[in-house]
Amino acid sequence: MRANGPRRAERTDVTITDGRTPRIGVRFEPDWPPEQLPAFARWAEDAGFDELWFSEDLPWAGGVAMAASALAATTRLHVGLGLLPAVTRNVVTAAMEIAALSRIAPGRLTVALGHGIPSWMEQIGARVPRPFAALGETTSALTALLAGEEVTMSGRHVRLDGVRLGFPPEQPPRVLLGTTGPTGLALTGRVADGVVLPEIASPEAVRWARREMETAGRAGSAVVFAMTSLGDDPGRAIEQVRQRMQRIVEFRVFDRLAEIAGLGSDGSGEMTDAILQSVALAGTPDDALAAIAGWRAAGCETVVVVAGADDPLASYRRFAEDVLPRIRS
Image (cartoon, rainbow, N blue to C red; front, side, top):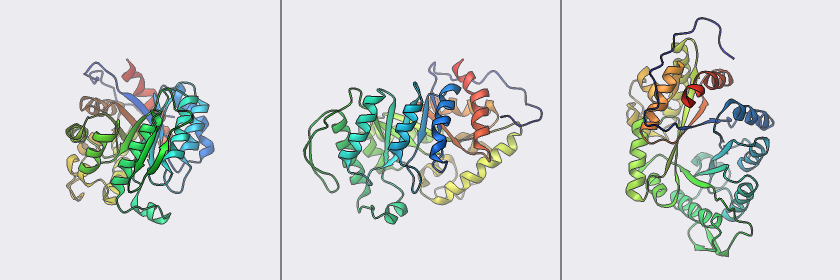
């Protein structure tokens, strides 16, 4: 659904320059009613998106049930479940559920773990004293179980004695981590297949994250979530992203990424249009293409569009109509 009014003439000189197009995903927002997911997933598949992502945020819908619903409603679409808090489930029951989905829909699932928002984990009695240790143990155990291995582990958070899945998947899904600091990125390089970066990641942040991972082990994949606000009035579209980005900066959980973006380690920098358009798909379709090209050149493999506009569905449709075809071409 497009806004009425004149359109700006579109340039044709914005291209993905490395010869490989990135995968493009779209997020089903956590606070959207779960009964809307099947229809949204079918729309995303028909519109040409490669992937559909959603997170398991308190107190909205459960991630595994949502992943199952999205996979059942589609035939091609890849489903990204992330972030899934590592400390809210026993790792074996999580592996059983993920393995079942991976066998039912081979090659169509990616799982991304996080240590959970501390206040939420405190609220449900799941906060642990060493969250990175718990995240690392859970990731290592989950990866081994999904690979069909017998796992014995005596850790601070995960304790298993000779456990092996009865139905391991023939194609184990990738296991990524959602993290943004040096400690988490080093852990990712050692135990995971890559990283999921939040809605304030510039191309330079992608480069930095990949360097941190590679120093510790291997760079792996990089998935970037990007706020999306496109319209015929680019100034208004950018302003809608600015309001939402300001809330993320003030949340003070992504200080390193804010600093890399040019906003200062405490978010005190000026949030200019140029900075916003380096971390978001904001403005015109050409602006969105330029942002995607920047992330891809930095090593990002997947860009996931997330709500950044007052009418996110209209902005998603605009992206599908005016940006996706140009990426494919």
